[in-house]
Image (tube, rainbow, N blue to C red; front, side, top):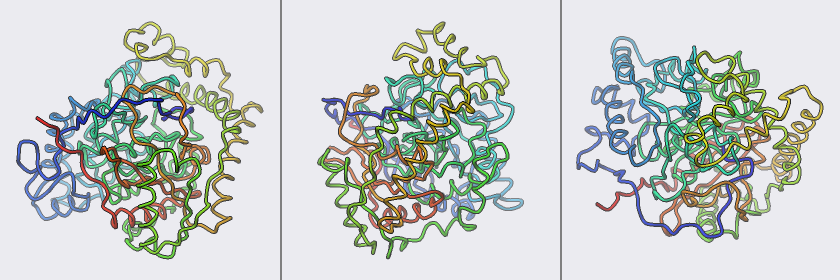
Length: 533
């Protein structure tokens, strides 16, 4: 996740060196197309399905093409921790299924990359980016992985991430893990990919899979999506199950898709969501997305909708952010939205400062201890054991930053029945929901829009260094509310910027619809440009 003290802008960031990754828009660097008649950067999952249904390509063709892109580009990006040794076999099995019966779901034969904190009961390790979990052997797939497989997805591998989802130290470097090294931003290799779903966002942006899955505790999907010109969805808490995912806290963790377009993000979210008996928060998710996933993708979704504009704390900080945001608001008006000014979500920094960290520290100790104890394998079985492991392997695990958050969490009792803990969580959740709901109801809004974040910071940026841009994620994350970010434009030097749509509980489908309408009208995203040879 993005640290609880959010990513801050350094007083002076490194100047853009102009180094971009060679991810072609219409052809490989070798000069040939990805596949005959199918451009992997621009094609949606629906395009890929039509190509497979028509016999022009197979899932094996698709999977092989993505594996080749990983082989060629990942040495510079470090976005993928490892590929699934069974990926090609799974793709051929999908082709057999399609030929003999029918597609199992909207992701039949589609290569999907998982964040490295999601359990798979196969030959892929689940490490959360730490060598401490190399001996872990999950006995079953995470529920969301089972859902993806049931929809026909080919799990092609696992993505790098900020180690332990950025909850080991407030001074962590985003996108770094001891297992996968430093993930790099494909739009500028000297800029941060943000975190913690760094590898998932970079892989989606660079076309290393059709779609990638991330997790979000406080900006861990939306921040990486913002700086990689991808669509990121942090779903309503419980819309997608968390069972089988290495946790930070069940009160805020929310897995979601990161994709190059809203179509792929919507299809993947639809395939993953649903009640899981092992995740009580998912019980209310039944029926919260349309029965037909295409219903979320109406180009006219913004017409007549009241969209509030949140400027305070976000506008007046960065001229490129201001320029792109004003153009986005103008486009919303052109699309028929009723734009409502003054829809600023109030800051809750004082409440969050007093209650957020104490609550999450207690929750982390409780949840990580439960996960470690329940997972088979030769790995530390408690948070105390993880801390000791890191000290013994300091040269590998602690070379770049410490484990202050681990140590603070271990000093709590991890007791979720403790009255002091319950007060911290209760106050925080109530205030976060009130901050958003009061604006929505007070202005009779369908959604709120705001800039997602600043442009990518320097690659070696660490933790907190003070910045004026207010968090766009803090209230929605603590409230358990949905947040969708979509590409909106670029700085004058070419760094991506996103537009965020925020709403109340279980308005995920509506927010996706608004984002889709904006995307289809602007086509703002462009692939990372080829690097000079």
